[in-house]
Image (cartoon, rainbow, N blue to C red; front, side, top):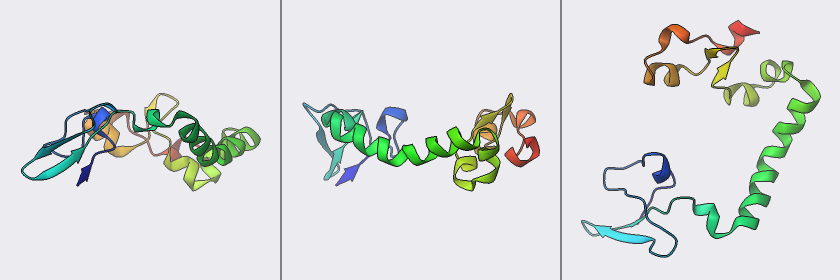
Length: 109
């Protein structure tokens, strides 16, 4: 069984293709594939509660710490991809061929 939770963003494997909640699976070379886009859409309330519980602590840190929280909390800093017009995630800068616009987040403190 293969479950591709990123199929709506390009997928993770060559044989992945988007499916729907009404027709969620298909088989390729004997491997059952489940590649539903927007998987949380099957259970929107549960997904919303789970997402809120996972993200609320970060939101509270940002609300109380402001911009400084990005530099003080490694978990928050790791989630920053852009800041003050610069790309702060090296793989993103490389993937977009914008290495000249890359700066480490710490260098922008």
